[in-house]
Structures are given as C-alpha cells and as structure tokens.
Image 1 (cartoon, helix red, strand yellow):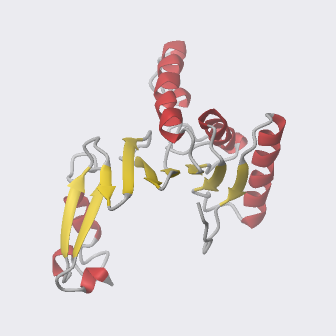
Image 2 (cartoon, one colour; image 1 turned 45 degrees about the vertical axis):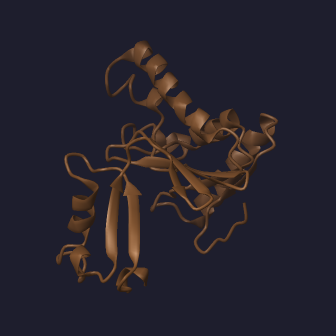
Length: 212
C-alpha cells in the first residue's frame, strides 16, 4: 500500500542486472505484458539505489551486502540491530564447486573458489539466524552444477564454519514436496549433531514468523 500513497517515498536497494541498471530491471518486470501498473504510475516516489559496497543505515538498523555466485546478479544481506544479526544468503552456489568444473581450472579453481567462499563465511559469522540456499540434495546437485544453487551439505558446512546460532533451509526446489523437505531438514540436523555443532536447524515454511 505505501506504493499507492501520494507523498510517500520508497527506497529500493539492490544490485543492477547484467547489462541493465536496477531501475530498468524494476521497470521491465512491471511492463504491461507482466503487470497492469507501471513503475511510473505509482503515487509514491520510488528512489532506487544500486549497491556499491557500502553499509546502509535505516534508523538503528545496519544492512550490509555482498555479491553471491549465481548466473543472475544476487546479493546476500546482513541485517544488524540491537546486537542481533540476521543473514539472508540465497540464490548462491559455492564457488569451489563451479570454478574447477565449469571454468576448467581444476585444483587451482577449487583453491581460488574456497577463498571466495571464505568471504561468505566471514560475512555470516556469528549470525543469530542464517537463511541460506539449500535447494538440492547432494545427489540432485551432481547434475546441476552451474545452476546457481547449493547442495544441502554445503549449506550445513557454511552454517558450521560461520558459527551461526540458527540455520533456516531456504529456496526449496519447486519439485520437492513437503516429505522431501522434511527429509532434508532431518539430514541437516543429523549432520550438525554428528559434527557437534549446537545449531538450531529448520526448513523455512510459508507463513512462518520468527523472533531473532
């Protein structure tokens, strides 16, 4: 509703698309073929800010961001307030799993990819809640390298390395029913227990409300 309120200003922060500005991306997905109201038809002023690596401050909330590994441009966000930290990192595939195979760089690619993956670990370190991409089972992922999403074991490893307090498994595959998601949740919990990691793990669900 704020978008239809005259006198309101909405600030949108995000990454530009490949070859297109963020504003053009927003205008494109609201063209008549896709949506009945154009971006310029909204009563509120829409102020678009492209990510340039700086933290954003909104009142007493600080928002940091970093780029992820996905065929389209995606960002992870770290939202901090009152000593609590929430990290949202979805639409991401570990670099170490792609630079060796897709780029044909072998062991050198895996080593460089591991260093890049370490930046996400640092970004997520100490998160009270880590919402992370866990679209595929490890078996499914074997045939989906380069699709821009993570296997379950990599997501669990990220949470352990970052010493997150809670892990929310997110970006469920549309071909997975509730039974598959429940099995993945159980597998993740068993893996965390086997590693002695005191991380609360659960699968994200529609309508879920959480306190951090």
